[in-house]
Amino acid sequence: MRAYPITNISLMQYIFIIHGTQVGIGILTLPRELTEIAGTDGWISILFGGVCSVLASILITNIMKKHPDKTLYDLLPIYLGPYLGTLGNIFVCLYGALATFTVIFTTLFVINVWILVETPNYLILAGYLIPAYIIGSNGIKALGRYSEITFYLAIWMPILLLVPLKEANVLHLLPVLKEGWWPVFSAVKNTIISFLGFEMAFFFYPYLKCKKQATKGIILANLMSVVMFLLITLISYLFFSPNEINQYQWPTLTLLKEIEFPFLERFEIIYLSFYMYVLSTTWLPYIYVTILGSQAILKRGNHKKHLLIVLFLLLFASIFFQPSYMQVSLLAKVWGDAGLIISYVFPVLLGFYIILHHFFTRRKPTS
Picture 1: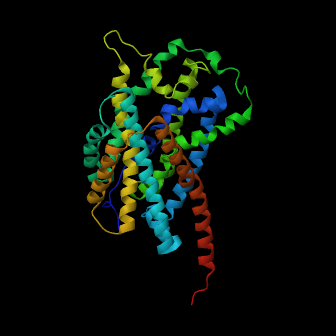
Picture 2: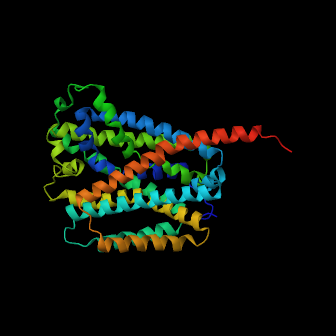
Picture 3: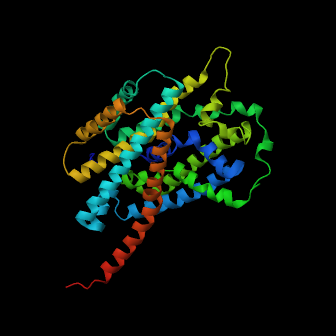
């Protein structure tokens, strides 16, 4: 039973859903995380991470092509049986819930630190959950349209970050590979975690109108994310010195303080306020994943009821949970480790299992 009625999303909406899911909270800390491991050669790690995400994306798409009308929640019971399949669905659903929780509470933490210092989390979150319910209750096509319009409205944001380049120092990037290849390869793990979001193909592929273009679409979504991560990381490296960048928890946000207008003070508040909409394109798809999972596990219930329950639990948690930076970092680490398994390891295992399953099924004699 589908959590949402059968509907179609366009190729562009499919691309923007995946790209929006990828470009979320990771981009705020990625330059510092890469510098700590690979120095200013961290931008090379992004290229390797992009290759890994593209390969994993293609593998997921090829798996879904065998069952074009089913999501991952439908596939697991088919190949693993009803009991193991349900257990697998529970883990995947919990992954969606963890991702949702992590992104939302990281967003709340950033708002508390940079914009609304004294405002309680539950008041901020309530303002987000109302439009989230409107989008979620109207189905996946509404999410596709929202992701697409948000992308177009946010095009100016990375362009504006070019302003600090007037004080750029190219020498910060030289010499290339100053510590060799090993630090670069060591930092790839951080980059592939930042690319999490392409696993949405497991859940949104059945709703894609032109499935023949799915591979092309998911590759393009990953390439757009590569360009975005490279742009932000290189700007940070060119502006901050190698030692200075490690002093900032959120180097991407610190760049905003260098953007000044004679008629406007604290431009970063306006920038961040709009960026909250961009972040919503990361956690909204994961809410869909959670709802799809709860619908598949319980095998009953209107998707609007599931959505209301999830949103209520988030609001309830925000009343009692005021995360610190360490707690937000821990959530991100747990989500990243889980994402490595779900997005990179699991597709490989599932792909091999499907190949073996088909091989032995074909060889089984018919009576």
